[in-house]
Image (cartoon, helix red, strand yellow):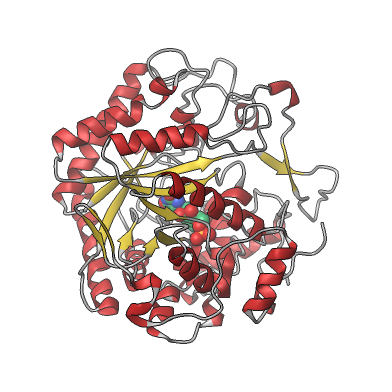
Length: 494
Ligand SMILES: Cc1cc2nc3c(=O)[nH]c(=O)nc-3n(C[C@H](O)[C@H](O)[C@H](O)COP(=O)(O)O)c2cc1C
C-alpha cells in the first residue's frame, strides 16, 4: 500500500474531500462550520420521554486506572470531569463498569457493587459540575452507566493473567489464546447468575440517579459473544431467539427491579474475522500490515455476528437489523453503533494511523474504516428512523471531525456523534465549534494508539503524546521503554 496521507497536513476541506473521493468513499462533509443554536450539532434530540440537549455524545472510555477493588482513582475522576467539560449532552456510560469482580477485563476496571456506590455517585457528580461550567446548565443532559462482563477477555486478577469465560469455542480466537479444546464453557446456571448481577448493578445505577444503563453488546465481550454463539447448545446458543435470550432476560429483570431506569445497548453492528500482522512483511523492527486470519476451511463461518458466513471478511447486516427490531420491540430506543473488536480487528473498531503494540500496520487508509462505520450506521438509521443512534469511530477525522459531524447530523446519517479518543486529548473539540472558537490543532488526537498500548502493557490509559498529565508521568517513561523494546512504531515517528 502507498503511504497514507496525513490529515494534519491537508489544511483545507477541499483537499480532504478529494482524498476521500480518491479512496472511493463518500461521507457527508460541510465546508463551513455553523456556530450557535443554528448548528445541527446544537439541535436537541427528543423521542418520547428521552430529551437530549445536543448531538454530542461522549463515548465510554475506560482508563485502566481503578483500584484493585474496583473503585476510581484521581485519574478516573479527572477523566469523568473531562467527559463533562466536553459539553456533550449524552454521556454514553462513562466507561465499562463490570457487574462482577471476576467479569473484569483488567484488574483496574471499575465494578458496580455495594462497596463502590459512593464512588460511582462521585463520578456522576463531578461530571455534572464540570458540564454545568461548560454548558451553563444541565438541561437535556443524559448520563448512563455502561454495564459489562468481559467474557472471553476477562483478566480480573492483579497478575493480569487471562481468565477467559467463554460461551463457545472459536477456531481462531481459541488458538490465539492457547485455549485447550476442553476449556470449560460458561454453564447455563453460571449465565443466570451473571444475568442477576446485571440486574443488581442496574439497581445501583438507578438508585444513584443515572438516567440509563447500557447493556453492552460490543467489542467481543460477553454480550457480543452471545450474539455470535451459533455453535453453542442449549438455551443461550444456536437460534437467534436463543442468542438474544441473555439480552431479554437482562432487560426483563432490570425493568422489574428499576422500573424508571432507561436502557441503551452499545452494539458491534458488524464484524470481520480476526486480523494479524502479515508474516511476509513483518520484521523484528516493524509490524507488517494486517491481513485476515486464514479461514477458507472455516466456511460457512459461524463464529461471529454481522458477518457474511460465506465471505466472512464482509459484513452482513441482516441479523443486525433483526436485533435492532428486537430492541425496538423491547422499548429500547437508545442504540450506540460500533463495529468489530479492539482485540482481534482494531483497524475496524478504532481506525488509527499507528497500531497498538499488539496490533498490525493499517491494512487500509484509516479513513476507509471511518467511512465503513458511518455507512453501516446510516443503513441502520434509515431502516429505524424513529430510534436514536449514536455513531462511533470519528476521532481519526482529526481537524475535519467537526465538518463531518455537522454534515452527518444535518443529512440524517446519524442522530448523535460519539467522541472516543478525541475526548482523551481535546474533549471540547465540538463545543469549540458550537462556540465559533478556532480549532485547537495542538490538542487534536493523531491516533498514536498509546491509549491502547499502555493498558496492553499493564499501564493506565490516557493521551501520553499530548496530555501533560500523562506525558510527564512516571508511566510515560515506562511506556517509552516498552515501546523501544517492542516492534510497534513509536508515537514520535513521523
Ligand atoms: C483507551 C480506550 C478506552 C475505551 N474504553 C471503552 C469502554 O470502556 N467501553 C466501550 O464500549 N468502548 C470503549 N472504547 C472504544 C471507544 O468508545 C470508541 O468506540 C473507539 O475509540 C472508536 O471511536 P473514536 O474513533 O472516537 O476513538 C475505548 C477505546 C479506547 C481507545
